[in-house]
Length: 327
Image 1 (cartoon, rainbow, N blue to C red):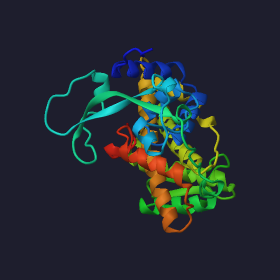
Image 2: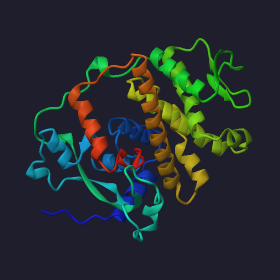
Image 3: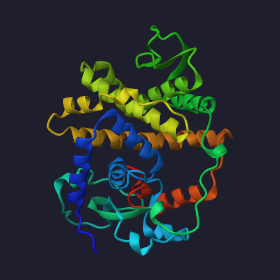
Image 4: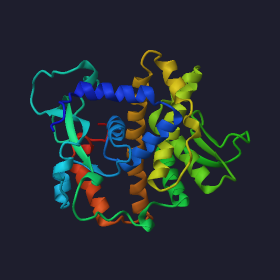
């Protein structure tokens, strides 16, 4: 039986409805965890994928599965996961479509062309395919230890023109902070390795995401709250990428902060926040992993799982072919 036709507007409505109805800290952590596994997909598509298949782990188009000798059986053909795929225009012309789907229009695509709208794309989880198994990354390839991550993040601080200090933060409850006047990042000494590197990642996220002038002049608790959620979420994703856990307690108030920004449509605030978090975290992960490789500290993942990710990133228009994972 053929499935009903779905439009980009239908997916946008489903996305906003899902975020509006499930915007607790627990849901935010659930989406962050899914973004770690579905690392070539945007926040909006992570939400759409998990809405349709909560336990999706490896997702790709049918032609990409075919490259790995896997096929979509007949009983799964009409059970595809629907996502928002960008439409790239190579020449000139007038774009059409719902205004809500054109907020990102005008962005240049890698290889030329510009984003002019969205269409519905179809992907399948590995559980919906048949074929030879993919080798998961081995345990020894899961990620770098906290001590190595600390050194890589310290390079990020220095590259941004700041000095990293381990010492007294001025208060026992304060694990770290950034002083934008003195251009220093201070992390309290005596922390365990995971807590210390998590806090350092948090401060690096601030350096990458937020304008120092806006932070120092902000008089709104709400604005600081959103910035804290963004920075803590980036730290969460970086550590999760390397198999380290930080918990999710700072995210419990995300719904109230989003409502304070936009009382009528808080789901749009959460969507934009998620998009920024996913984009920045993946760029930071790429930069940190590059530093780890240069230092000879990274480990090579198992071939099949790594190859699937690379092929998906190269060929999937929802992922990095636009120059980043924002889609």
